Image 1 (cartoon, rainbow, N blue to C red):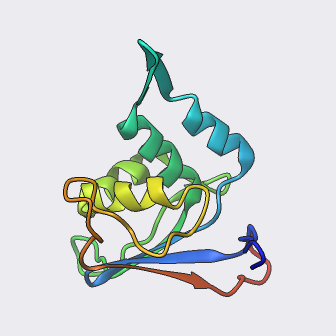
Image 2 (tube, rainbow, N blue to C red):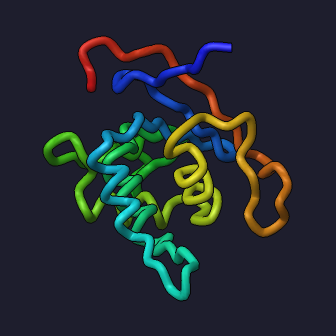
Length: 140
């Protein structure tokens, strides 16, 4: 079976309940930035999951659906140089079920799994669905 490759223009739709997050594949430099958050203590790898998740969201999240602002308008992400602003990262983290979004981010960093696992139960996470969308023309 051939290895499936995600293009930088592909989007992975992560549906969590009635909301959706559209994520692009990370560049190698951002993967290295996330890997740098792992420290070794007595031979065991300990990852700063909170900081790793923020880096992932900042560089990979491209759109959201199912959210409105205080005035009822569709929520729009704020970008600077093709990545989310720090304020926007904070808003995104506070608007979702933290553990669900972070679990999804960490599990799809290198590949698209068949299912997202709930780290607390070891079972498939309920209410979460992944779908690879067709490439977006002219985006990166």
